[in-house]
Every structure is written in structure tokens, then in C-alpha cells.
Amino acid sequence: MSLDADLAALRDADAAIPSPVPLPIGALASVVVGAVRGLADGDWWVPGLRERAGAVLRGVALDAIGDGTAGSRSHHVAPASPTPALRALHAVGLAAASPDAAVVVHLGVGSLADGAFTEALNLAALRQVRVIFVVALIDLTGAPVPRQSAASVSALAQAYGVRCVEVDGRDASAVRDAVLQAREQIGPTCVAAVLNA
Image (cartoon, helix red, strand yellow):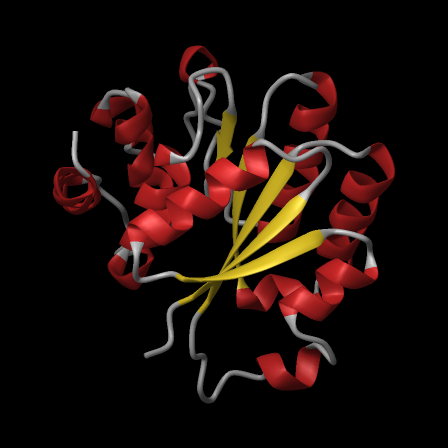
């Protein structure tokens, strides 16, 4: 299946998932498609609530992901979590338990100021587990993010000894290629997916 077909399938699934609070995938679609297509069958994927529709690209039935909490062990999809920093720690745990697999976890720029995220970076580097932190960098004009974190995602990751690569998050193939390269590395990688025009 082509990346364009994947993007269409993802948007259709996203529109079909019932939710009491709409969480449209919007600009994150290319990031999700690229991240999922960079994984192998035995790898784990750890989405947030916005990314959860991407589970259909891993073969999970739409009705199994509709409530935002159901994961699928057989498809290596963790339950969607509304708490980014805990997702990051969960990803480190999955990677430690499955040393032959890679684990992709989706985070947003707001995660940078959370202590659990920095602890996840630290643990991933100390344990040299193959966690791929995909951080969507989107303009949050008006939000207090610049006052919450004194460092960029790249500087923060590198301070903990985690490789960081910046890609155009609007280009699914660029995200996919970054995840594919990270899968070949020993230890964690941070993929900063820039979504600002």
C-alpha cells in the first residue's frame, strides 16, 4: 500500500472513531503514517489519543480502537494513552521487555517539560533500549510551552545521550525513513517531526 493510500485510510479511520471530545488527527497524519510504516511486524507502537486511528495501519479493527483505550497485543499496539510522559515510560518498559523489537512512542512538544519524559529519555539511554521517541513539533502560539522548557527537544535528548534527528513532519516518507534508520541503531533515538510551515 502506498503512503498516500495509508494517509487516506488513516483519515477515514480517524473520522469514523466515535469520541465524546473530537481529537482530529489533522497535521499529525503524515507523522503517524511515517512512524507506523517504519516499523516491522514484531515492533511495538505506542500512540496517544490523537494518533490512535493509526492502529488500523497495523491491522487492528476499527471497532477495537474506537474507545481510545483498547490496544492489541497480537498487533503490537499499546493502548492509546492521554498522558504523554507515561506513554514514554511505557515505551521504555516495552523495549526492555522485548530487546529484539523497536518501540515507537508518539509525543508532542508539550511533553518536553514533564519530568517523566526526561526520566524516560534517561532510562532509555542507560538501558540502551531501542525506543524511538517521535515528537511532533507544532506551533503552539499562545501556549506556555516556551516558558515550561528551557531546551529544545534536540538539546534535551542529546543531554541524556539520545540521538536526535529532525525531519519534515509533513512528509510521511521522511518520518518513515528516520524510523527505519533508528530501528537499525543500538539504543534510543528521538525523531523531531517539524510540522510548522
